[in-house]
Image (cartoon, rainbow, N blue to C red):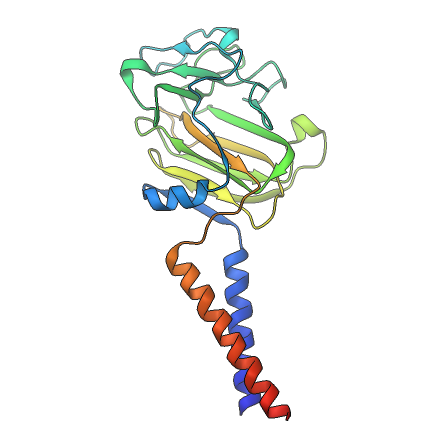
Length: 243
């Protein structure tokens, strides 16, 4: 009987540990959950991107020309951007939202444009990212005035690396929320944000990325501690039984 209890305890702990190590998609307004996700990550608020001049827009209209000097490609360390198309040419734009609002911190956000460099606040909006050195976590705030998106974490981005691209995780997430994906190891080399709205795609703010895994929430940490205790008791009983 003791042997079966030990096996059951070990099986429970194995499943618990596996669950805690699995990839995590975040879609939240909870400040504590956001802080836990961002712990140990680099956070880019887009208020000052070296060599990039923010493009001021008065409204979320599609088809407005943007300044090439406002495009963000590789000016942020450890990450490269595109909107599809030609790498290094078709890149998202640093927008100054000013009076129209929608940024989470300050007034600057990153948003999609079309292949001609015009604003793209319709169904075709997307932003792609490439991490030459792979990361474990990618997250950001979505504009509450715009629409929901699909996020995809992949092992690379083919357009940049010319290597076969495999999707690791994906999720449908909510406008106005902090959203992202975290993996147990640093295996994210590509990340895509794809509009799900026909009238209002998205902008992102406070982009958070790096090799750190998120800090467990209190409930998860307590559960993990309980699993450790169960494992210790199980091993003790198994040792006594053998004696």
